[in-house]
Image 1 (cartoon, chains in turn cyan, green):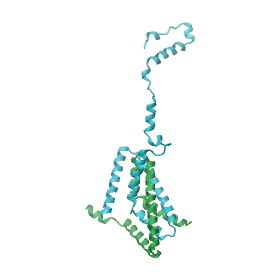
Image 2 (cartoon, chains in turn blue, orange; image 1 turned 90 degrees about the vertical axis):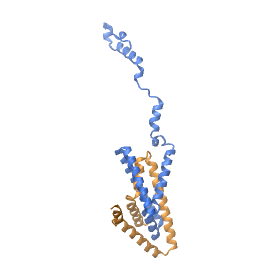
Image 3 (cartoon, one colour; image 1 turned 60 degrees about the vertical axis):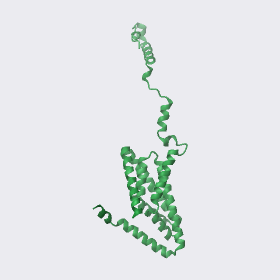
Amino acid sequence: MKLDSVVPNLSASELASPNSDLSKQLELKLTDTPEIFPKFTPELVEFSVSSNPDLSEKNKGLSQKQWAIFASTFVTIFFAEIGDKTQIAILLMTAESHNPWIVFAGAGSALIATSLLGVLLGRWLSSRIDPRTLERAAGGILLAISALLLWEVLS
Amino acid sequence: MDWQLLGISFITVFLSELGDKSQLATIALGSSCNSPRAVFFGTASALLLASLIGVLIGQGTAEVLPPSLVKAIAAIGFAVMGLRLLWPKSDELEASE
């Protein structure tokens, strides 16, 4: 930056229009120091959108990672639920009622409601608690559930 | 449309599922994963499939056995489940001591 060229010559005409020199000085400053301003390249924007898979894949449906989560959740919950007291209750209610599909409608909507509650509670917890603590707690809970299932199988 | 049966089955399944280990797993998975939507769809479809299997087996049982016997088995089954849930877990306490 050339400071000696910046010194203004305060003649009468220049005082009348004080901004003209200033804008030239500013222009000099702006053109001389372009490195100060961050470069908003398209790659940065791309990164911020793709870090949230839900957001970037909304129009394309579920991404591959989401399918993996869906499949693993499906298998886990399905095998945890077979032989569970809920399923036995549904079985017994269907056997003694004359309307199996009404039982299925009631049970299905109750199951959807409880799974929605569970996921919403999980989301609320993830907004309140540190992610690392949550991951550890989730891992601990899942291990405890698997131990409980094994104990039920063996006993 | 038997509203009473619908209500009873809804309440029964809702209450039995509320603190169930599958709901704990849903909460754990829903909080730690990046995509709660995938967790919800996985959980809901797994539970619906399990309940569908329960309904189909129940229908088969109702066709094979006489209805009064099925009702008696259902009553005994519910009583056993209720007692197991209400009974204090004394054997676990003894094992820990």
